[in-house]
Length: 457
Image (cartoon, rainbow, N blue to C red; front, side, top):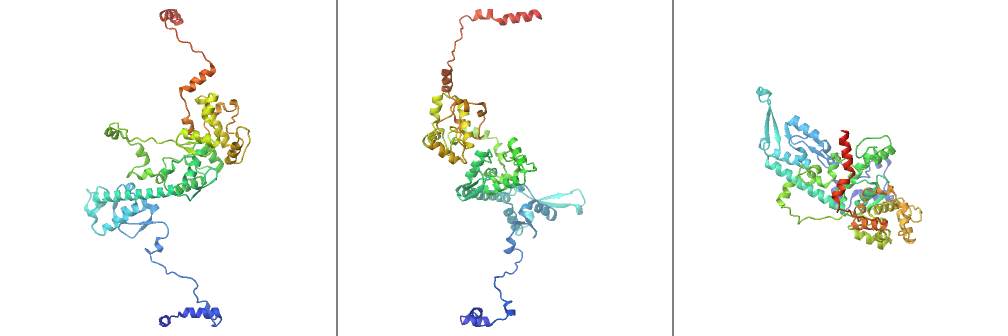
């Protein structure tokens, strides 16, 4: 009771004691100093309190106090079947398993289980003492169906909100899995780099959610020397890299369901994966629309500049960019050199390879980075100084430097290309004389060959 009296006087006896020690007025022996508490303490909390929330999330059993980690969902289902004889149908269609279990756990305390579940009697022909009843919880029950639909809507909303946050996030920091180059800003910078420089494409950034977790999952597989596509394990990193390059396995395994949670399409419809959505037969939808294409929207395909990472939605805008920024006029070069479609492809692939190797195709100087190369070529006016056509008009440049080079698909292959080629080569064209067709048939060498074959037979 001494402490309350001291508080009533407005003085804390502990403060007075501390002041005495600090000022040298009071004296505390060594034994008393051991009883001082210089840090805050916490009492142990019983299960279910704040301490119980630490660690991985868990799901309780519907009927008892058993808890199972979220990652061990199958163990919980097995427990409920064996111990409580309840079966949940189509568990994979439940968008949020934890909320689903908690909802029915509460409902089963309010009403008997038979009000919600279908009763399945096993061994019905056996003696009564050997018969047993199991309870089936499924979406035939309207309440269960509504619950599943609501959980699906909530999950979709959470995923779309998360996706929007990632799309607007400018604090992303990631490292390329193939060249260890660091990227900051938006996640699309890293994903576009891996697609462009390493031909590793996991999809459009806007179609991916929880991107950081996705990249960590892929990096962990590579650290374990595991191929991302065939998922075989190799003895060292160089062997894995050679395998993925030669087998063209720089992509993820589309049949691995582990990746489904990183794609928004898998959350759009209840119980449908991206494969099922793509395989849907939409002929009935087309019949209802009666060939109405008024709502058709054609999305432009972005093409990348030959010298920098600038992307434009149309090829005309890209031509203007390269002409104004890099003084490289592809249309003028095509016209002056009379390039046909295939020669344009070779030229584009040649320039792509030289820029990728940080080499100036005009003076053959090499640089440490593409930025230094661009600065040199623009200052020296080397972007428009192409080498002799014998250098780039080679069979090896039929093959694209980048697999997803959209610029190659937008090059002109009009009839004017053929006309220019014909004018350059001056190949004469002689029309067919059709005035003496009968005489041609009679004097044709085919008649003699047929007659000779008949005589031999």
